[in-house]
Length: 186
Image (cartoon, rainbow, N blue to C red; front, side, top):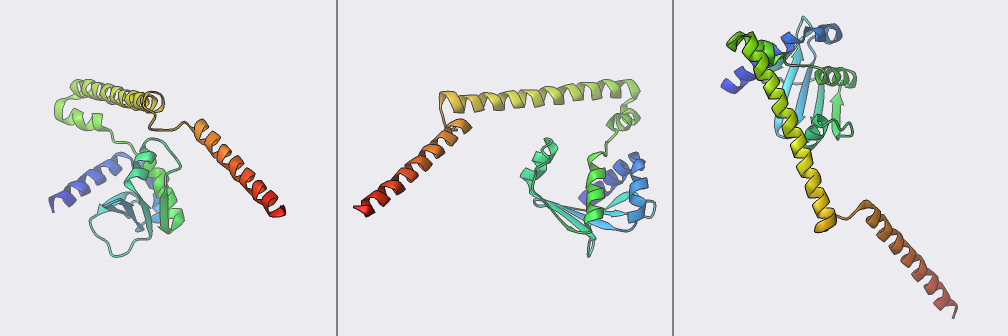
């Protein structure tokens, strides 16, 4: 299948650019891990030289990391409290996930092979600026909507107001209990 061929080539190319992985993964040779992110399944196996390789299918895996798409997005945003389920060889899964967090794609080097060094440098610089600006703009828009929904059209309650309401409900419940006790004494 064409998609599996593309996945294989891209994954292997990415890991070959990050050969520093070998020193930590060499002791986990021939172990495999399955990543389940929502409907997406991705199997990696550590080859004899210590680099992960993509496999389109494998019977059993030594470890599995499962998370929802929303948890994956939270991880990408830097939230360490995302809901992750790990099965099998916990040590291998932990090593693999920690290493994959530090893998980087040297896209400037790949672009320079196609369009030359100087255009690749400027294109990457422009791309980084676009990504940064888009990210900042997205957060600004989200903050604007949040403020609008909290202040102008209160669809969202402020935490302080929710806590105040809960305290008042608790106080009312306590008062009703006391009143019931007084009525029973009469």
